[in-house]
Image 1 (tube, protein in one colour):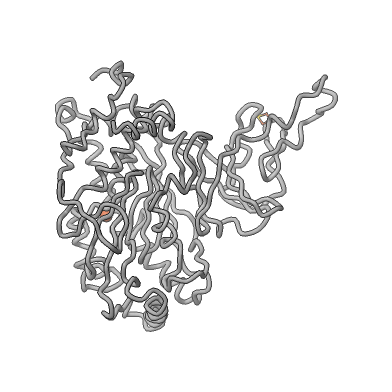
Image 2 (cartoon, rainbow, N blue to C red):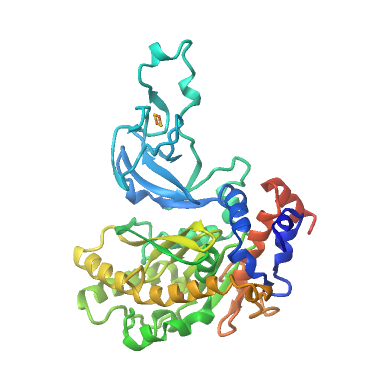
Length: 445
Ligand code: FES
Ligand code: FE
């Protein structure tokens, strides 16, 4: 391949050969592919930007990212949340340089253009004297994204032609409903625990997204965590090993692992701390009461296409892999907890979560090492002539009456979730807009 090849129709579906289960390594290392991803994936897809508990009051804001670009997530006086490009319309200065806070307006430090909480341009220096005739300030507000939310999780897209968020999620909507609910399965609120951990890893963002979508085969990487007993079940295997795993794949590119915890089997979390353990036992009692035989069928983790990965059970968290370059990704990880949990439980979980994942956490350090070498292994002149192998579990996919999507039960170590993620990636990369993608799907291409 040379650079010109990336303009050929259908090129990305040929690089990602999901029928054969082989993927060309250039998609992880080529600067051209990376540039096209910014235009065709990150400018078009629905992207996770934050949680409402981070902006509870009018005037509250956080900074987030959509692809490479900084965005402001702010709550207006009407309580509505807006997502806006953090770039002044005058000369591009960042109008907000704080990670979070509360404000009445966003004031550009360069030439003092001032924007409201919804991005409207409300103040321009010497407006009447300088601009004769006056220009229409209504047309020069911050660039606003389309937004949607599901149980407090906020998503945004730049693309007016993108399908509605519900359609984009498809059957994965139920998974998101479940992911942002308390352990007891009720309607209580959950909130971000502590701040956002942000750090950079020298790897391609897709390696993280596919790992997060349900890479059951990589459990071996975390053997030392199991041996050390640093997990909710303390030395009896990670909690997820104790139930049955089921992989679930969706045509929209989303993939999950569910656990099926046997009905009636006792579940003890964090036995070393009686207060925390008792708190979880009570939550599980309520969950069983509420959900009956479905109580133990629960998404464990997964990825919503393209780059939002989550853990639903302990440690409950979200990891967004923001691309920085073909070989670098900025990771943003946050943890969640029941809003009404006792302070002692919150503090315990915070310490546990930080030791489990995040830049100082044991499992994330195992994973980062793998991801960096995998990206590096896509760079060599000889190495990149040879595709990666994604054939695990091909032809073994089935259905499950309790779990939506195409499913495979572990211990078949299926790579169906990465195959689906890359398939959607290639479809978007090969389409000039969403309509073309949907037409092609209809035509069965
Ligand atoms: Fe913002 Fe000039 S760049 S006012
Ligand atoms: Fe891992």
